[in-house]
Amino acid sequence: MAKGLDIEARLVISRGRDDIQIAASGAYLIVNIPSQRVLDELTADDKTKAPKAPKPPGTPNALQQLNMLALRLGLVLDLRVAGKTYVTFGTGRSPKITLNAVMGKIGSFFRS
Image (cartoon, rainbow, N blue to C red; front, side, top):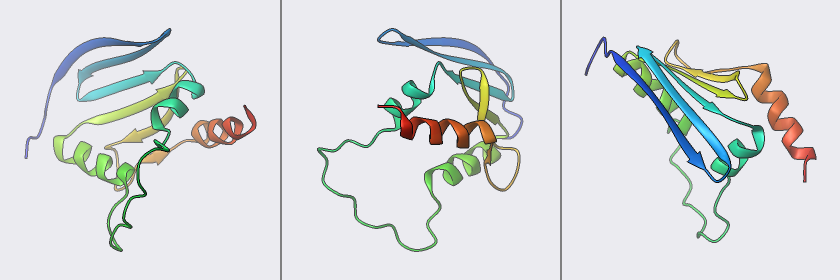
């Protein structure tokens, strides 16, 4: 697989009134989501779909799969919400989830 991938990019994706920013320099990629509300909307399950079949035991979850891909490509992916790092992929055996992510998720339970 590729090692030493070098990227230079800047991209802004508009979603309604919200702008999701993606920037890359060298092997470092930053995805900045403007707020916890936008992150919750992006990651919400579609309630109209049929339930998924259970995964076989030992299957890595989506975060772990993304981390393994980042490691293979030699990239570091920094997911930020409102400018604060939530999860970092590609720096170790598992993704690094920050306290900001935990507190943001807990806070989103209390919003209506």
